[in-house]
Image 1 (tube, helix red, strand yellow):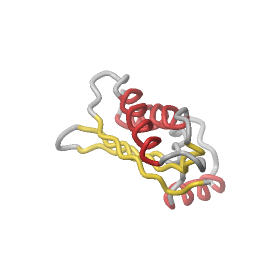
Image 2: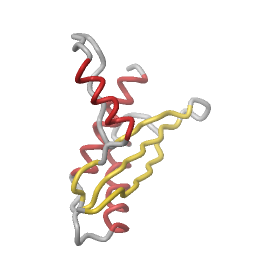
Image 3: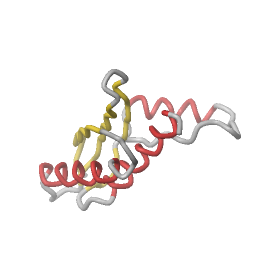
Image 4: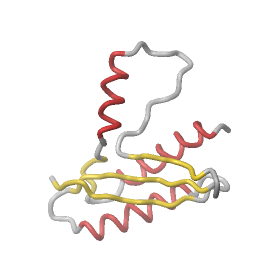
Amino acid sequence: MTADTLRDRLAEAAAGAAQDVPGVAFLSPGVVDLLRTRVADRAPRLAAGPGPRTQGVRVSRDEAAGAWHVDIRLVLHRGHRALDVTRAVHAATLTAVRAEPEVAARVTVTVTGVV
């Protein structure tokens, strides 16, 4: 499995786990995600190209240590405590990411808004 394939699988697993937590309204796309979407809308589709990137989730790898970093940005539903939802998203994401064999990961969760 290539690093890009694993990165995409980790992002999809993290996004799915985060979205299933009660209190999460949606994953919040960052500026890079918004720009990527605008460019992708204008670019021709490649049949064998890489899959779509998951908005609101950024996955990177520390090449020296070999560990992965998953950064999740989300928006809460009003009436939910940010601390409780953040902890639940963190735990669910770690569980989902660790389902991949031999993946050491660190997870960061940021609440960007409330709706």
